[in-house]
Every structure is written in structure tokens, then in C-alpha cells.
Length: 132
Length: 110
Image 1: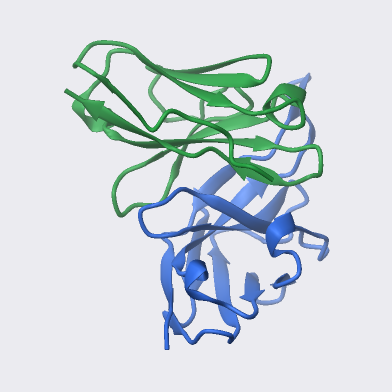
Image 2 (image 1 turned 180 degrees about the horizontal axis):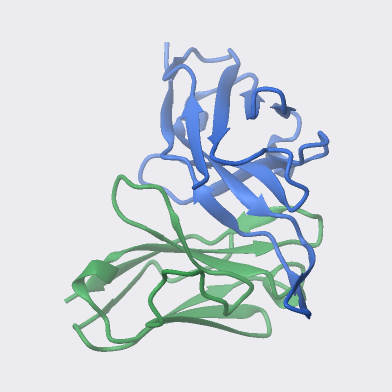
């Protein structure tokens, strides 16, 4: 059973860089059918997609965060990470990592269909507070 | 990249059916059959309930169903149960290869 676990500092000072790592267990991060994403949720608010990475290193980012965010992958450790620079109080949130199916055509028992990105499973989430 | 629009709250009595809408644009919900729905209980991580508009993952009750018409996707919960009380979020793939989530809906079982 695939499991994901976020780790990293729970407190970051304003203007500094937030860094989190997601460790994948029970499966390989190098699977060609999946990519790996970061999603955050400010306290009392909704979910916000941050970005995703494929095992090859190909990335996609939320346009409003693109200038501050970087996602990387370490296949040797079965981990992927996110860095968010110049943080402010608005970046305080629970940060989740999750696996996403790669958009494409998949065939099962001779029946093929186009399938799109959906996130499953998710890590338990880790709260990061930005405060001095 | 604006969030998809969902009603802030929906309520129903046990046994009833409720429907949550998720409205986007032709660049996301309307342009692709890649809408997914997530259930989130307080303090817990989201759980996938529906993917590709109307498919259910193994283990998810068949009381949950999804559909789409134009730029609006919908999640229907039939035979409402106390355990269904949670927040629900839709998500869609977009034309710029990103993902966008909905604003979230709080479901209350009366």
C-alpha cells in the first residue's frame, strides 16, 4: 500500500525559504504512470494546488507561485521536495503531498480510455507557520 | 487561475439526496472530462471520492456519483448518512496543464 509522509520545519520566518520533503513508501516514485504533487490549505480555507513533478524532473507550477516555488525529485531516496522562497504569513498552511495519475490513455483488459490527473493517496499533511 | 465555484454549504436529512455543483470555464471543467471530487473530514487529509467526472475508486460507496454538463460538474450523495458530514472539494485539469480546486462545500447532515 502506497504511503506518503511530509517532513520539514513547522515554523519559518518571514522572507525566508520554506522547505518540505515527501517520502514515498510502498511503491516507486519512478513509475511512468504517475506524477507527484504538492497541495496546501491555509487554516480554515480551501485547497490550493502548488505544483507537480514527474520522476524525470519535468514540472508544472501554479502560475501565481511560479516565481517563488521549486519542486525537485530524488529517485534514489524515493522522495520529492518543495521549496517556497520569500514566504509571508499568507503562506501559513497545512502542506500535503500526493500522488497523481499522469494524464493519458490507459488500457485494461483490452478496454482503453483517456484518464486524467486525480490525487490519491495523500500524505497526512504538515502545518507550516510563517512567523517571526 | 481562479478557483472553481462551489456553494459554501449544502444540508440534508438522513436518507435524502443532495447535489453539490462545481462551476468552472471552458478552459477547465468544460474542456476536459478530468474532474475529481474529494471528501475531507476535520483535521484529516482529503480522500478521493470520484475521478474522471463519474468514476468511483474501489472502496467508495455507490451512494456517491458524479456528472458534468457544460462548465458545471456535480457530485450527488444519495441516502445521506451522518458519516457523510464533511467538506467536499472538486478539482479539474486545466488548459495550461495545471490543476485547480473548487472553493469547497460544507455538507451538514441535519
